[in-house]
Amino acid sequence: MTAVKVAVGLVFVNLTLNLILIWTPLEVAGLAWSTAFCAVVQVLILSRLLSVRTGSLFDTSPAAESL
Image (cartoon, rainbow, N blue to C red; front, side, top):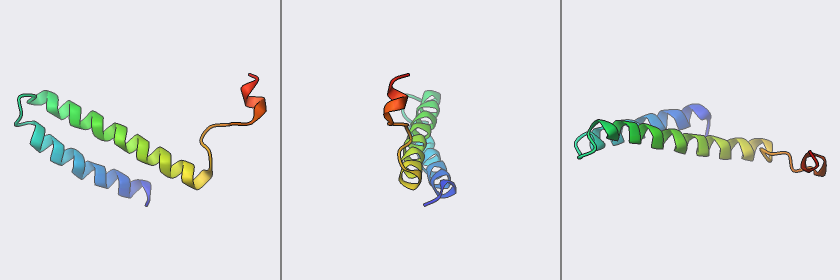
């Protein structure tokens, strides 16, 4: 799975949530909620993909802990 596939998939999720939430009592705020939700999900998915491909995202060496 690539970053482009993740982004395209979440665009469709965002569009679907936008169309659903615009008709709820949230109205325009539903658009902001769906966009924020999809952004967080995208960051989590891409972070996981990056850590799988490159190893740990954070430096866990003892030298880094002494700073």
